[in-house]
Image (cartoon, rainbow, N blue to C red; front, side, top):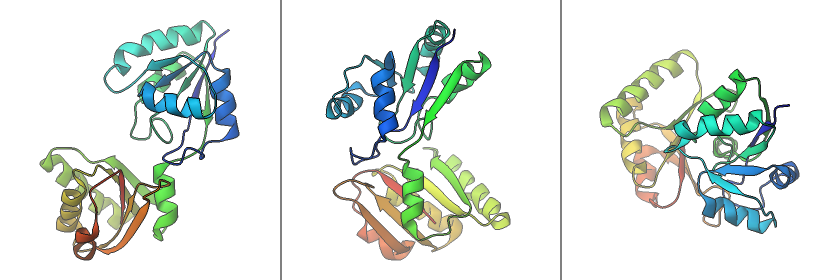
Length: 221
C-alpha cells in the first residue's frame, strides 16, 4: 500500500503561526523534506518534534524525485515543507507533486500561512481577483516583457497584481513597474508577521525613498 505525501504550510515569520494539524502531521511522518535543515530544525525544536530532515530544494529536486516517489510507493509517509509559508508557492515541490500524482500516490495538503494571502489581506486593494507573479525574472528584458504582458492581461480582467521581491531588487522593480504602468498606487509589505513588519502605501514616486531595503518584500498594485 502506497504512503502519503503531505504538503505542510509553515509560518512565514511569526513561529506561532502554525496549525495544530501541521504540528501533528510533522510528528507523525517518517521524515521531512525541507529546503534548509537549520530553518526547519528551529521550527521543529520550538514544538519539540524530533524527526529526520532531508534537503529538498531547487538544486537537487530533479535527482531527488525518483528516490522520494520510490519511498512513497513503499508506504512511507513524507512531509514537504518550505522555509516559510505554503510549499510550491515560489518554492520547489511542483515536479514532485506532479510525479506523485502520475503514480496515484495519495497527497494531502495541510493549509496555513501564505505570504501572498497575508499581503493581499492587509493591502486594502481589491481581493476578489488577483494575479500572482511570484519573483520576476532576473534579466531586465524578461522582467519588462512580463510586466508588459501583465498590463495587457489586467486591462482585460481587472486584478490586483502581487509580486515577491528581494531587498536587493525591490527599488529597481518599483522603477520598472512605474516605467510600464505609470506612477500607480502601490502597497509594499515588508517582513510580514515579524517584529519589523511594515506596510507602505502610496504612489511609487512618493514611497520609494521610504523603503528600507531589508527583509522580504511583497509588492501589490
